[in-house]
Length: 185
Length: 197
Image (cartoon, each protein chain N blue to C red):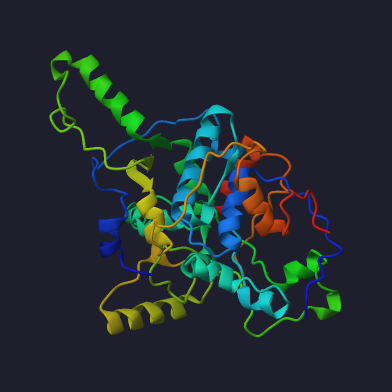
């Protein structure tokens, strides 16, 4: 495990914020109502021995460190505490933050974020706090923890309509057919 | 050995987004996995807030981010959480035994290997140097170890740092998503915390 001094520069957990911050709950769910998906570590050697070779697929995605990380402790209480106080801080939220400032002090109208005393918006984050310590998770945090660059193809928000050109492509790869199969037999 | 998929009938109805994701995986075209993970985390969080979705994704990944971001060290400084109160679990390993349970391989074909991964036994990251003694050890043993440790490292072990019992064995494994049919009640949550403490 790397030392926290170098990580602190990369993982945006406690920087860029006040030293103490008590975030309120952002959902009506209570901690005890939440279930957690704890990722399953994968023993690729055992799977390969028993005829299920998956290593090359995950190696092609540079995910060896990610799977290595999975076999470790999950802190249920801590993550639940984090989750019920978490909120998404994106460009829209940062804009609302500026509007609130102007509502309180109309003379700030037209000023920059810095002039309003706000941090510049850098990237979308999930913001929360644990025992008053601000905690942020961003894409960069995930990149750092799984030791894997944030690069490669990303396709999201496709309509599930049958006319999409993607249908034939993915059905060919998954089922070796241009028709969508409902079962593998 | 080849896995016989003939016996398996799997209902497949993933969205087109998911199928495109799998297409890139199977054709070994590099995908932006951190971005997919982060987007899914955001989507699930918003669903928890708007439609009371009760599942938190990526429990282990979020735990590791909290650890590497220095949160556990900060909690350690103020002695806020004990190891037990953190509610520590570890994920069940997917291996040849999983294939056997899924009936993808015959029971007699399954073999335990010397290289098999074992579930993590790391109790937590709260204590960097876990002393190999506990309060159940004879007091003389505890004192001897503490004196010896001080002589060797010039550092003292506080009484409060010595665990009640010596940890041994694997961490508990949470129930799978399928087997967990109902949410915990408040009473069960509080009871669980008291038992752990």
